[in-house]
Length: 333
Ligand SMILES: Cc1cc2nc3c(=O)[nH]c(=O)nc-3n(C[C@H](O)[C@H](O)[C@H](O)COP(=O)(O)OP(=O)(O)OC[C@H]3O[C@@H](n4cnc5c(N)ncnc54)[C@H](O)[C@@H]3O)c2cc1C
Image (cartoon, rainbow, N blue to C red):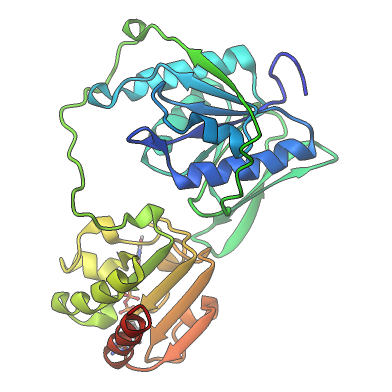
């Protein structure tokens, strides 16, 4: 561990309503293991000074927690976040910066990398140190998920990677762990923003968000028409799952784009993914094949989805899905 901060590992965390999102906490746990392996200091960076669970970040493994004076939600300003993070990184020279994949990191992290004259490995599913070179080996799907690439940064620092939500399991907190809490003030007026927040629309549907869900139930073109999505929505409800879909139901206007999984939709990595009437095209697999358990329901035994499935059910989804929903409802009382 160096005193000037070089060699440190940072995790840029995401909060909602003052609380840290579960994938960020899981990433802290993974980063703790990496930091332990090479005796680096682990810093959690919060883009707000109002973080109710900041002490939790220390309990999950952070040695230090930076609370940045970020813009408040009604004054959202990515330019300010980028400037603040870049200034801090230039001062502290961390060796590794990690964040979970999501809308905030999609906007902030690449711009930060450009300003620091380095690169980003997006959507990684595994991170390890190469002990000889001390480089971070960042594993991510490439070429539409048809192969896994190990990415290293031989010449540039910091090494920046974003990680799929749920790629790592949340560890157990150690309440006796204490971290240093450091408030970082920032002259917001010094940043001229290129964007302006006009309005915030909250999702009040109460439904589980696809990118944060631990269970996803996905309906494909095999459902035949928009009305039949009610059947998979019911299965999703019983399981407390998010509803996903492949691209054709979106193209046909059956389901909104926000539910699309795949190369041109959302990338998910839940504990359980149930694919109903989905063929398993490479562009769909690119968005879900790192799910922990994949259950495929398809009447065609040669459907490619069975090649990635943990459990396959060959048969008519119109018989299997309602039966599954009924049995699960009974089992859950
Ligand atoms: C540039 C590009 C980007 C793309 N991005 C995406 C993306 O992000 N996400 C995505 O999903 N696709 C994407 N696609 C489209 C992709 O190539 C496939 O066309 C699409 O994934 C197929 O969707 P599907 O499996 O639902 O439909 P289909 O290929 O039509 O498969 C339907 C499946 O349902 C089964 N089935 C039918 N009836 C029943 C029944 N009664 N019971 C059980 N099974 C049944 C069939 O056997 C079949 O396997 C992209 C394509 C391109 C070119």
